[in-house]
Length: 197
Image: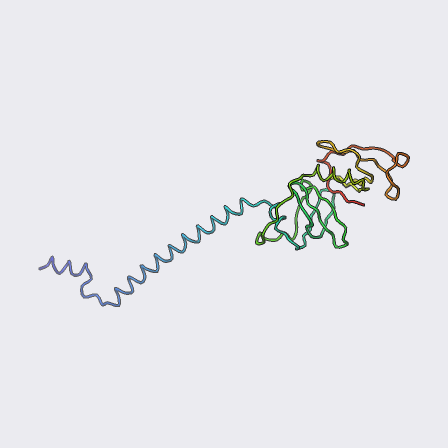
């Protein structure tokens, strides 16, 4: 008889139903809170993993028409929109309408880069050297700014695998033998940006 009474007390016999409900509700709330924490932790981990796969150049590709500012090794800050981009270059259209070709390796900081919420455009398949070869074929006068901020004006004559030769001449005269003041070879790695003049 004593055993039966002890068992009944352990099982809560005589405990009002509302106390059982509160006990079960409390347990249910604890389980729900634990599940929520697990889901939040998993979402946070997946978000960190996905962000780790996105490069800043991917975000440049998703920039669309939104304006951004690039701090470039030449001590310049360019503000405009992304007009085009490749694997190692970006073409920025300034508010004035002028376009500046920027080597991505010379970019020190980016301001105004949008979160990757838009559909990214695919980068052009050709690289920095191909763009410079097109400028050489076009025979356009260019302004080349190196990482130190030095400006050179002339026409790109020859593009090598890792450098180009610039025939230096005044901007207001065509590239003719008599107008060439000198020639300089500029390594790709030294270039911050190029403007077609």
